Length: 298
Image (cartoon, rainbow, N blue to C red):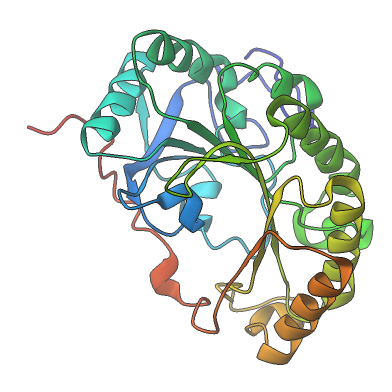
């Protein structure tokens, strides 16, 4: 962690002395560890996903609905041993899986307790939930540890990724990372209860005013993976920012915009996809990052 190169920003920060571009230092920092029911149905099942929300993020999108933790300020530092314990506490609460949400900037600290948990009978699928702004080498390090990848593909346009996430190379990096995820998991496999036990679900959030880029994303993905993966086309964009040089980000997605993208997706031949209804863009979908489950219960 003395010259960090974990994410494609390659910021070189000495994270033992202060945060890197991800907003995180060299200690695991977690804001919430609890059952989560707002993922795709094949992830949540009936018991809920055992979601661990990590603080900080290499991407830093201007419209991030989890801004409370993505800047690295909220959350609490924990040890690898505590993370190991959290995995088993979530299992005891009947979690369907362990869902690691935005933990790529902590991989050197997360991998050892994750490996130990799997070796010591965790017995749950592990989900890696990511913006996809990752290096291929980081994804390779998860082979044998992660069963389900849940990546975003946010943009194809470098103009949009530059403006909204300050990374003109987003598509180049994310598409290579998703290729590696698919290599590791292969075709999606479901159990008898339609829960996903291995595979990749690729998410795309449709942004207001930018349906053309959404269509380009969908066309690219289907051309690359066909129906070997599951797609999740989301309408839940929530305008959490109050001022922006991009006025389209100050409003919700319209039903007409979303329906246009869904019609396009159907036209490409996509058969395995989740879509959302018109009530998805609500602040109530944003979790409470009040440290639930981070520390042992008294």
